[in-house]
Length: 254
Image 1 (spheres, rainbow, N blue to C red):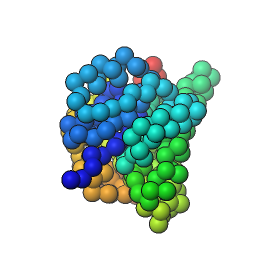
Image 2: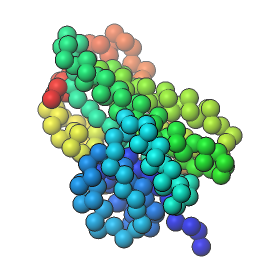
Image 3: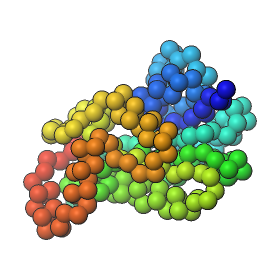
Image 4: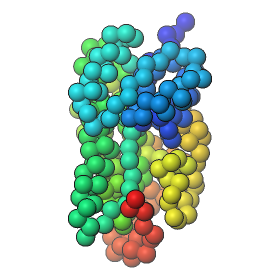
């Protein structure tokens, strides 16, 4: 009988992270769940029968993540899958001095938080000769979105970081998987004051993401309709993109 999976998920208290945790718990995985809000983590996990560890911490805190990784590995062994899902999104404006701090927070959480999440597990995965590092990026990383410079920049950085990591670890047995969702119905998107084409539920997105991880896909965009849009955005001439994007509605700053 195959051993149940051991899975780490950051940002596990809500949205995609919580949906991923539910899906893996239903499959009997041993979970290491990370998020800032301990009460929400505990409430969310109350119905789980699967074994789990809860780590209430901020992914910007590298020392706390390293301690959590050591604890999980000591108790359960090296995880099979580490999903760096934690992220924040907020609108920013170039001429607002107070948004510099906001920009820094987005980069620190979405990019450095992903680096902090993966680093403590790489040596153990190398030694075992296997495992998957999964980064939740976004189609927002394909082109710069007006009024969302911090979020677009952070997701572009995660896509590039994951590609670098994938090449660096080639031949080690460690898979690096980049997943780029489109619009997902989560607390992060519920205040967006504009239409969100091909909007998916968090549970629907989690089902697709888990399937992609299980198949070992190195790169994927969901849903498929957004994958088509992403390809078009990627090849669209700058002059045309600039004209279209300049008229797009902005994400709220707060």
